[in-house]
Amino acid sequence: MDEPLDRAVPPFQPGDIQPPDVPQPLPPRDRVWVHVVLFILTIASTTSVGAHHYYGFVRGFGADAVVLPNFGDPIFYLRGLWYSATILAILGCHEMGHYLACRYYRVDASLPFFLPAPLPLTGTLGAFIRIRERMPSKIALFDIGIAGPIAGFLIAVPALFLGLAISKVERLPESLVGIELGEPLLFRAVAWLVWGDIPDGMSLNMHPMAFASWFGLLATALNLFPIGQLDGGHIAYAVLGRRSTLITLAMVCVAVGLTFVSSSWIVWAVLMVVMLVIVGPRHPPTLDDDIPMDQRRLLLALIALIMLIVCFTPAPIEPFVTGQ
Image (cartoon, rainbow, N blue to C red; front, top):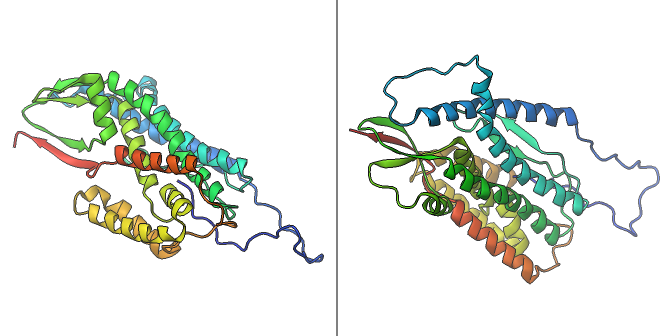
C-alpha cells in the first residue's frame, strides 16, 4: 500500500511566472539508513516468527507432549527464512512495483518502509511507500496503483504452489485447540490441484512458505479494496473519477459489516474508518483528470477486481477446536 497523497498546491507549469526572489525548495531526500534499519528489523521479526511456524509445522497436529525448541540453536532461526524470505519477497515486490512506476512517471516517492511488529502470526504490519506529490494524470495514478498488487501477486502465486507442495496432510487428533485460516478461492483451487480432495478427519498442515503465501494473498485483497487511499481506491478513482467516492463509502460499510462475520476484521475496519475521517472520502484529483482510460487499462482494472475476489476470504482467522 502507499501513504495518502499530499494535498499540495500543483507545481508551476511551463509558462507560469515564478517570482525571482522566491527560492525553489529542494526535493526531500530519503534517509536511507531509516529504510535499511526498518528492513533489518523486519527480517529479524519475520524470521523469528517463521522459526516458530516451522517448529509447529514439523511438530504437526498430533504431538502429545510439548517440547520447547532450542532457542539457542542458529538452525532454529535459519529455518525461519522459509517464511521470512517468502513474505518479504511478496511485500517487497509489491512496494517496488509502486516505487518503480513512480520513477517511470517522475513522481516523487520514498523508498519502501517495512514495518516490523511483534505479532505472533505475521511478524510484520506490511510495508508502504510515501508519495510526496500529486499525480500528474489518472493514467499515472492507475499505473502506479495497480503495479504493486500485480507485482506482489506474481510472486505469491508460484510461492503458494511450492509452499502447498511441501506441506503435509495429517490426521486431526481427537482433541485439538488452534486457529483456522480462511481459504481464499485461489488458495482452495491450488490446494485442490496439489492435494485433491482431502478426506474427512484429515487436514492440511501448512508449510511456513504456504502460510506466507496465504498472508500475501490476504494483503493483496486488503490493498485492492476500493477505499480512499488504498491501491484499489487509486484504481477506482482513475476509472470512475469522482463517482468513486460512493464506492469508498459503500466499501467502508462493507468493512464494518465484515466485523459481524469475523472478529479478525475489527482492527482493519477501525483503520479504514479512521482513514475516512482523517483523509475524507474523496480521492484527491490528479493534475490532469481529463485523460480517459484506454481499453487495455480498463481490462487491467477488471483483472484487479478478479484478483480481489480470488484473494479475499470473509473469515481470515478463527478459533479451531475439536473433541468438544
